[in-house]
Image (tube, rainbow over all chains, first blue to last red; front, side):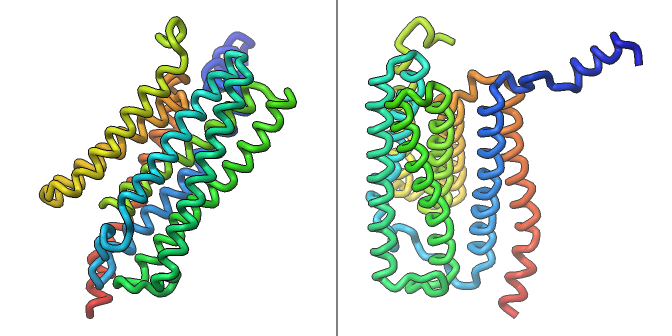
Length: 204
Length: 100
């Protein structure tokens, strides 16, 4: 192949050093987010499937859960996303103290969310809900509840670990704006997944 | 990017307020006793708006290259729709099987 042809082909198909105009770290984080998003997509589709085929009527969520309490959990997570976004921008602008302060707020929000989830789980278990048993009707209801919120909660927990490590490393100047941005992308993803769980599981 | 000259943190506060307003509207819709089909459309539409705001403003997808946004949003949406469409074709069959 002629060298100029090869250059044209490479320009079209090679992708270059940054095909998405992003660093490799950010590109890898997005690939991870997409694959993790597909996991939740599968779980939510499975939930829809189990709900539709259930021969027993699905319980009304407002009779099982305290919807204002779930709204409080949503408020906490959205607020923590706001502080996370602020931390990312502060880190980018070199305002380290602001970034650290907002990272701490985000960690606090995540801990509050996990505490609320632990309370909700213990309340439902106390009422008799199990992976194979549900006092309000079809066992699939409790099953999908524990699987969906359990997977999400484990993501919140791992997000908190990542945020704590990032905060410590930023305070020691061992990481910079990019490290905070990667942690932020993951945290926002956790918030994004909750939007779907909140609507499809708790409201619809 | 308009935030470059103004307050760079404003976008997060504005997004946060809009997300809270949408969440309250979604919660209030339950109490309005709308027809079921309308409630479903209403909640799904607001869910997508919230997801777009988080992806666009918090995760900065609207400032990234369009190819990245297309791969992330398009890939996830299309895969989910295909998966759900294939599953939904089995609803009636399994329901009949369980009933009979």
